[in-house]
Image (cartoon, rainbow, N blue to C red):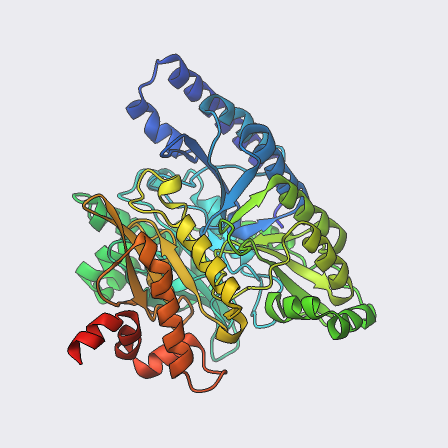
Length: 555
């Protein structure tokens, strides 16, 4: 992974010193909250429902053991002993004192971490496939691209005060594990017919109150043209994007209003103007960045320990079948550690759990960890012979839940328990759904089914692209939950269809249970997944299960 050089270290020290002075002025009353707001947002500090919140960047979801241990220290020393991993591959600390945040930022700087541009109307933390560098279906590791974009976008003078935030994702796998089509801009590593590696560029994706699927702006961009082309895209949007209405200020609205062809023409014109100013320094920088991402020294070892555990321990076998993914190196697996224990808050990890994960990465995982947009933690490089020891350690820490990709592996935003923007609770809904299906002992029979929950229209829980999406709203002071069906976050991305009237808080779990029962009744064999069945059948039969009283009245 990328290691900071002297410039990076000095830049971060100066930035933190500057923000410390701003915090001191706010605490003393020299700055009002309105004056302080744009300054704190540039440094990842939000004012939540009950307290300030610090959002820390985990660029492209990559951490080493020292960094994870430092996050545990922050949780323990300045928060309530835990952190919350988000759908943007960040971590949030929900209870710091404002006066302590400069010390937290200095502690982050000690391990090459920061909170810059994790909020505000700027280019946010660049996300990536959480299996990057390990996946068997990958053309190349896309993280050097993500790091290049991170360095280019950090404090970029043209893009610090845009009409709205701008989110970028990168991926290089055959499967889309980064929700590319739900981003303002996405970079997909591809090969052309000649076998050359380049980039497909997508624009105009996004969720929120007007969900849209991203469109292909450029089918194949040569490697040397990537950065000037991205700058052209952001520059065009920054110039012509709406600023009269914050709900229409995202690039998805600009693409929709102007049309893809018009945007493409404007980008090409801007690109032609700025391409000569990129004289190769970006490629020199990229080559240096790539050198930081050399593959680990994979080892060869007997697999007997894994085979014995798999054949003789049914709990280990269930976990292995559910939480392991194919690695590109022989004898290795990618381990996804679930932060979705049944009844627990999705994405939360205690300081003790973070330290254990750091220790496991250092001892067994080539000192690498990843955070997924699905709010889980990944050990990307684990030899299979070490998996029984890892599983035993995860059992001790209550991190051994075998539910990746199943109905209890729920994405959920913090909702009204924390967020000042939320209009309904989402965490308790996620906890209750997971608990209910654990009681029913059905989730392995159900198979792959993704539930995503948002506590407001901003869609931080990605509900629009959930197989079952749940949106919590306020209806005359009462929580009301709308259900969407058929959403998809893969390369076949789709926005879910609204099923009908919403449900009260105490009705939402039974409603989900009826949908799932409908799927079990309607599917063609155990191999047909929920999303496959939905695409075959459409909304109507599922709606009949969801609203049985309507069917009864019609009869």
